[in-house]
Length: 399
Image (cartoon, rainbow, N blue to C red; front, top):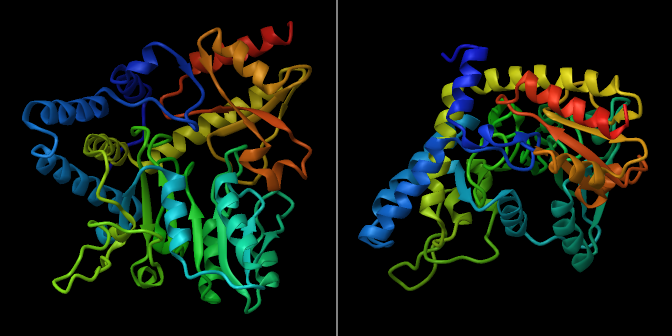
């Protein structure tokens, strides 16, 4: 069993992370800093391809792809056959959504108010084509999606419940398992966007009760860009017919007809980066060795301390909602546009994020938010880094 992270553990992890030596990084929710070992796993596969031929090196690469699938299954308490390797969160979520049976006029999709803008775009286009509707599940007093309000909305026209577990515009954590209980009780398909959750919070897909869960590897998992994971519950898979297929997802049978795979790889395509899969496998192994519970505990402690200290700076407003919160800390600085705050900090070697309405329009518009500054932490984040960020923000305020 992994043991809780000590300061010595964190320093050792930072020593094996090149970016930790060169930048004060508070944009882990955008993309975190990969380890030297993850970078080396990618490099080794690329060099193998260069020396022996890309196709010939595919045997080794495919072994690492399957290793990544096994490790992802461990991470999510799933079966390897329920895991697809994707090129990112939107690619995985979108492939699963497009594989559902077509919507019909009058049918409904229910979404939390924090739904990712990319998912909303896909759902709205489908609704426009078919005459379906998208309805927003009310939130409770903390700002989180309300399971009781969801239950009151249900009728026989509801085709899908969609939830973004951790919104991109702040620290709120939605009650994914409680929503899952409602979905399972009424046998309604349930999709979770876990882009920010993957690698930051322990995930047990069986306990959460979702049919589909998508995630990306470049955030808390510290994997390479251009990679993601998709979970599809085994007995839900027959309800998904991919929008397009190739020789991997539906190879031709002896009669010349396509045969859809009977595992989640029916949502994969044959063209993928085996080198990046090598990086994903290493990143997953590192996260599992550290222990997701340990990662969650350290991130929560750091983020809560950062919220308190930011709120103490005159003119700084912390915008996070929710009773349970993540490592994303949203704030604004009076008199400064968030993009300006981001730019001024970047000039000092301090990276933060800045999100607009397009990320989470159903939440930001009702709250009157046009843009937010976002400092997102990792288990790699240290007190000196927090002090540097806080001092830089104080300086922006002219203190």
